[in-house]
Image (cartoon, rainbow, N blue to C red):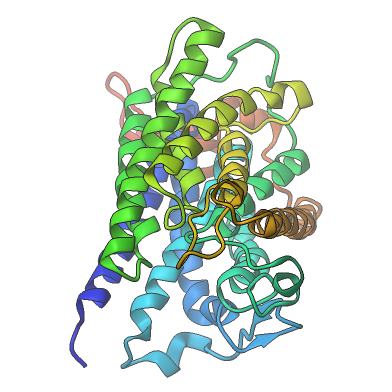
Length: 421
């Protein structure tokens, strides 16, 4: 079988999406404290390792037909080891799907920076992907409960989620919120305004650039036509651009000055918000979604101080909030297809909005319950949190016996020896 242009594009897109996880590692690593930077990077990289293996062994089977448990999940035994797909073109799409699972769980890690045991995280990753990500991906994209043929989809209508508003961002953002409450706040959380400051802002900007670059594959990899691919590309440029400007303007009005961290966070918020809608709204609609997401997320990140949850790197404020904004906005801004349907503002009625709201609520409930069960089980058995002494010293030293930076005449061996003393 000859390699087609479509296969090549999916392979390139898969590579772009895989690059996003190291980009996320830079983004989170720069935002973290210096004594936790390597731990943040490692939490992303171990996600690649864990999910890459899980996906081959049983993960992909759980996201594809045939479904079991009433459309809740695909049969995990149907594609064990992907043996049936060797020698077929299926592996191109299977590999593409793996990269989405990888970055989804990696996104969660930013919320629990500075105080999480690496071993506990390494247990959480494969369990959460198996019990939360894979079933939800099947329910939305694999013909399960939330699809047009599923029980929820038949009642409320099929929600539009082209690239992961529910499956990736609401899923990861809600899981982050649950874990933060289970693990608890850092010792110095909320004592002073701005108590946590990113230690390496240029690294954050490099990570942002890699995320934006990879996101064109994230959103565009499943494009079916040249016309659809063009729309996705422009929307993936326009929404984060608008969100960046909106976030900086919000900072200017609220704080008196815009910041580079605000610009980077605005870009990510816009990318998150356009993800489910990238193939379904006009470029003008993408700009509007970006503006709302930029303002909404910029305001939402401060809620952690009001409600007392220590979301260290603002996963909840960016991914959960912008994911909900983008998913629900489709109900207003979706373009008609062949002159039919569309969102409220295009005369399509409330049907699509109801479907988007139903999918959002279902995702929040499903992810919240399952993540709580997984998180509590780990916390009460092997323990999720480092000791107060290790938190004060830094998780880079306590968990990895390494330091991101060596100053003066010190080298890596000095750091290791210091950690042993």
